[in-house]
Amino acid sequence: MSKYVANYNNMEVHRIGCPCVMDVYENHQRGYYSLQKALSAGYDGCKNCLPAYHNLRKRLK
Ligand SMILES: [Zn+2]
Image (tube, rainbow, N blue to C red; front, side):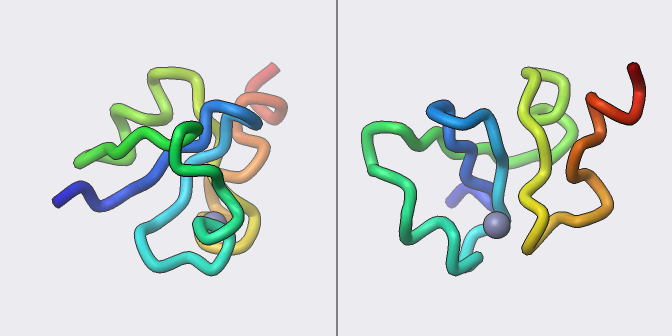
C-alpha cells in the first residue's frame, strides 16, 4: 500500500485519507511510498494534509 497519493493533474501530493484525495480522479492518481520521492518528482504538498510542504517549490525559488 502506498502512503501518499499524487495528483498529476494539479501536481499536488496528499496523504492517504486526506479528504481531497476523494476529489482526485483515479486516472490522475499516482501512489508513492515515500513523500520525498513524490517531492523530488516535482509534486507540491497539499495545503490541507501536508501544509509544511505546500508551495515548497515556490518558496525555494
Ligand atoms: Zn490533501
